[in-house]
Image (cartoon, rainbow, N blue to C red):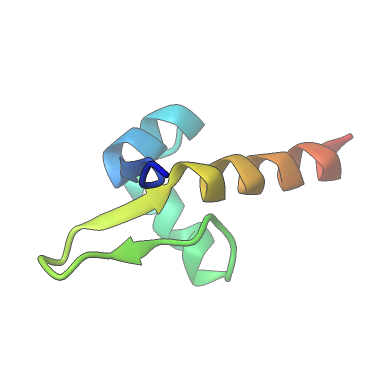
Length: 62
């Protein structure tokens, strides 16, 4: 079984077309995809978590 694809925060921001500041404001309000903090301090988002988060927001906008 392959390890889940991990996206860098920069990749996530590019995909959702959002600035880092706006992303952190959204996260401060308790929204946004789940982040994983690596031992070196870098942040990652699992591809599946981002896809699920996007799907939930797509349904809410419909």
